[in-house]
Amino acid sequence: MTPNERRIPFGPYETWVRVTGDLSSAKRPVIILHGGPGVAHNYVDAYKLLAKGGRAVIHYDQLGCGNSTLLPDKGADFWTPQLFVDELDNLVDHFGLRARGFHVLGQSWGGMLGAEYGVRRPKGLASLTIANSPASMLLWVAEANRLRSLMPQDVQDTLTLHEKAGTTDHPDYQKATADFYARHVCRVQPMPPEVQESFDQVARNPTVYNTMNGPNEFFVIGTLKNWSIIDQLPKIEVPTLILSGRHDEATPATVQPYKDGIKGSEWVIFEQSSHMPHVEEQEACMTTVEAFLDRHDG
Image 1 (cartoon, rainbow, N blue to C red):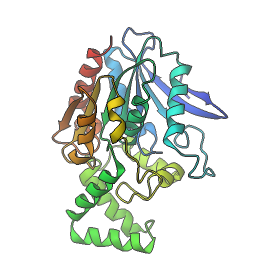
Image 2 (image 1 turned 180 degrees about the vertical axis):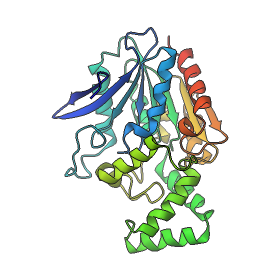
Image 3 (image 1 turned 30 degrees about the horizontal axis):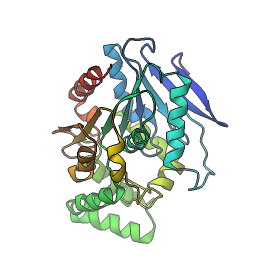
Image 4 (image 1 turned 45 degrees about the vertical axis):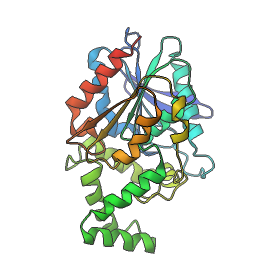
């Protein structure tokens, strides 16, 4: 590990953490929550660019993936949103951030986790950024099916065939999935190395993703399939920034409840992006997030 990396205790397990920048800076640090669940930090690595403005950026791999403790034998009852809320709280306390305040930025599942965190009104939370995240998995699945229906017919047929047969590991299914991803997950093709590494990591360590989500982004059969935070969103009282892409699998219909439910929230849509504006429109994304964080440093 490099000098800015460490593994911090979380009960009997360990969470891998990397800090970019100076934690003693006058600016409040921002904690980056990756997606999946179980898609390690690599693909959101670009958010370390926020440290150029003098702010510490904290990346970590959530339990069960990446460089953190892997638990391939744990069942569905172990992998819950509360587990990951507790892990985030543990990280905040490890660095002693409550007194000075901190920001949270969550992408995809990370934004769902950020919302779960925000509704609990944790001490020290200064702002929340929800990037490319649905407020309800039922909305997400409905919109995923709509987006699928706009794919070429042969792609749709291949997906349906293998889902019905239970052969979602077939190369033809994987190719059809990649076609969907190139439209709605990351429009930079081939995917940048750090993005590809996150997908490769899921292939090596699929426990969390497969258990909570399912085999891919649009065939959601895991424990999160009925998840919703919509009715709790008014509990979020910190300044909130919402990000999405015009071609995002997190379509406006899946994101709108955040805007409606969180008083005073701001919503920015990146016109040339799908699910990863931090990759697809990197400069514009970083400028937008940095300005928001600067406004709410207290």
